Image 1 (cartoon, rainbow, N blue to C red):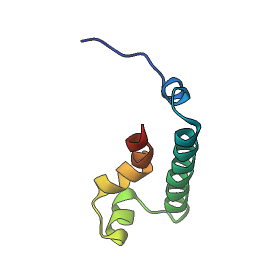
Image 2 (cartoon, rainbow, N blue to C red):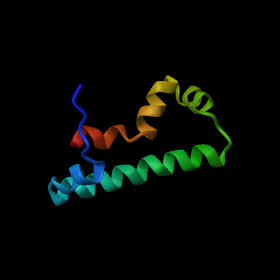
Image 3 (spheres, one colour):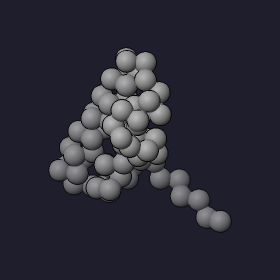
Image 4 (cartoon, one colour):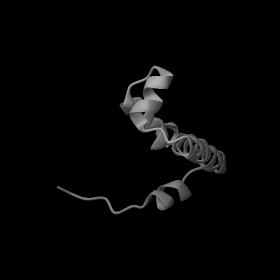
Amino acid sequence: MKRINTSFDEMLANTSPAIQQEVAMEFAVSNRIYELMTQRGLTKLQFAQALGKKPSEVTKVIIFKMGTEAL
């Protein structure tokens, strides 16, 4: 199995400035969601239940699902 040793930063450097800005904003949103969740002492499960979502959906948002679609 062949491995790709390209870092995320290297991949991002090969995208347009507009995409880079979008990715930065999406990281900021993702980080803020995580920050608020932890400040309130919520687990992913509790947070997901409060939103009426599955824990896996919360994980996708926190782990930057939005930005990976742009790449």
